[in-house]
Length: 97
Image (cartoon, rainbow, N blue to C red; front, side):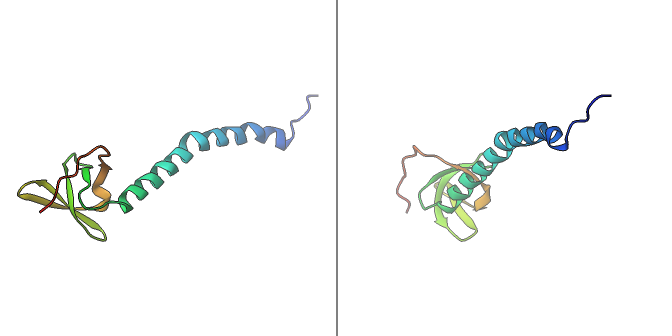
């Protein structure tokens, strides 16, 4: 008659799989969200940004929930902060009138 495996020995593979899943999926996603939140909180005037829709421009006004982005000399568009995908790090910041 075969011996039955104990409950704890049956759970070990599941715990290992959950641990691997956590470190490969959940943890990187949490870090990405934290980095994005920090980037959105630190938006400032003259930052060169790219929106989620691919529009490039410079921030000219920062409000609580939105930012106004200058796309060219005569075009300004107001975006929700969450619509900003990235801040260009190596951008030369022009003087805004």
